[in-house]
Length: 157
Image (cartoon, rainbow, N blue to C red):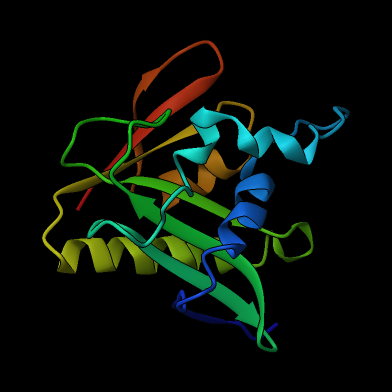
């Protein structure tokens, strides 16, 4: 399947709410949470006012001019927070487009952009049971901390 990765366009920031919901890991056999979960403050930190800070960067993956995924970074005190100089990642793809290499391509492109802009590292948090842990390791992230449910991962650029 042919896809394109591009920078988010002005006025598309509302897409991030959709992708934020898609980013929530739901283990097999568990019902997804209600969509309203994204309104919780600990999740809104990923999207509120996105594009208003210099460290806000977002890429969109699209197929046939239709957005199917997003990866975005910003300085925020989120689950994967390392320090105030390390941008945190969020990434998601609609279910029908997972496992095709699109997420890996988005991650690699975002890491390239961050390195080009002079960042030294990037972080993320991921639930231990999430299949994406393998992909994150493949693109250069390593586990630097963990709690009961999540790994905190860091990629040095």
